[in-house]
Length: 151
Image (cartoon, rainbow, N blue to C red; front, side, top):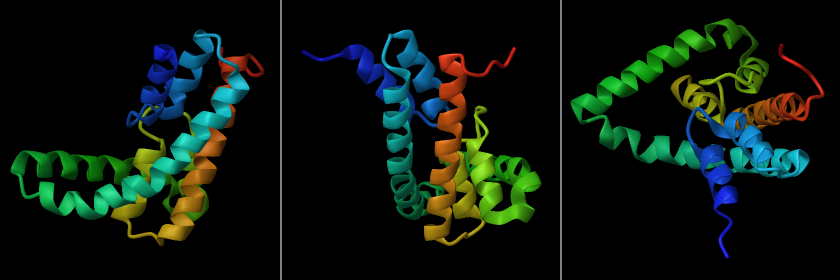
């Protein structure tokens, strides 16, 4: 039998700009073990990194030939550059911190897009983004588990 609640958590985890930030609290609301959610969601986020790079490498040059898509892409680039400015001087540590801050728009998708836009070395970028996903996962898990409070 299919566990639809688990599929919802997984779907939310792979959803751009929501990722584990939304998946861990949803899974906890479904009474899944928060630490199992942490491990699963961080792994899913890390597995997304090379897939996002592949997507950007092969699909972006094709779809940006469409004016509407190119406008959206240029907007995403502008926003990513603006959001990343304060972290730029720290390079890879900055990228990890950018991804690690659990706010909408600062996750694995944005971090990989930033690495793509700025032409960062893939291997270093991968480890920075993965570290950021781990940091974000720990923060969201601690908030969800009540270890730390944001209010």
